[in-house]
Length: 131
Image (cartoon, rainbow, N blue to C red; front, side, top):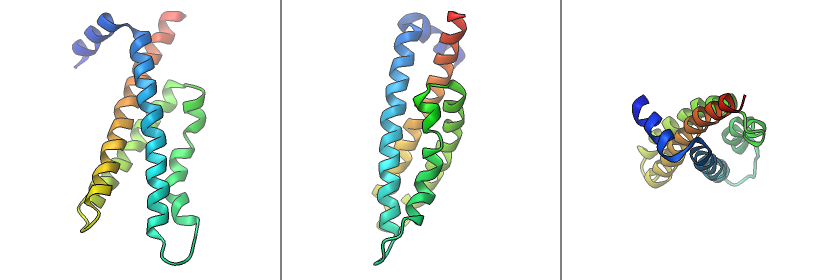
């Protein structure tokens, strides 16, 4: 895997790989937040309560300063948290009538994981080259 990534860096360049992984992180991050907002409202019955939505969305929102400031370490930690959403999506996919929502959540969180790990790797290498 390391040889493949090193070859990819040599072929395409760190700037291009960093930009692509950043775009993947931003897209999947926003999409996962929207899915969690929908899920928070779908859990509720007749009354409107913000607490279920906050339980799903707040862990993601805590990483928004790291994403905005483009810190590789914050992206690495977000990759670990995205695996929790992946597991949750797989579990929801096994529920009757919830398969599509769970699979969508699992795919989006997996995309966030791949984007975050790529960004953390490529951006930290890019910063090392600049210094």
